[in-house]
Length: 167
Image (cartoon, rainbow, N blue to C red; front, top):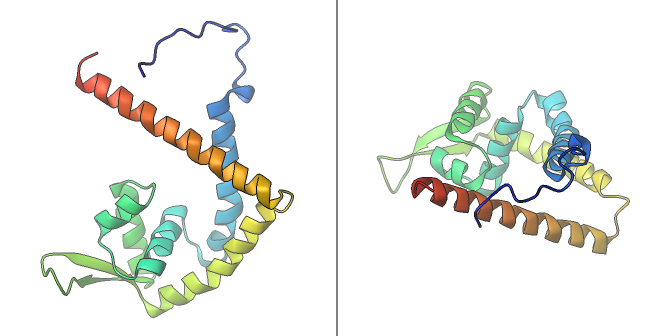
């Protein structure tokens, strides 16, 4: 789908506050801030540090590039999170037992204890964020979010292909 300036409707009446992408950004920031306050206040963790811990908490041992693949973070954010978590002694780097050229990251006992302490707290925030939504509304919300995300990813792919083709 090529993006063109066909939507000339209401150019003069454009209001950022009602623009869907802006509303999504405000929504995401509010939700993220509500959740991040739990681990930031309790353990001084950044969002990137928490995401790294959350990915490792269930997967046990992954490379930094595998963390990038499983998260919405770029290499720089993951690298900074890994350095900070190692400094806090929440994370350690080991040589992979199967591929000696590859290093893997694991939560330390201290890191795993923090992870296990934070999980019920962020689950409580999650429940509070959706407490006035029925189970059906929650399911619909998640379905709609997934649909919009797929649309956005398709647009990104289309725009990347157009740029590569010189269109």
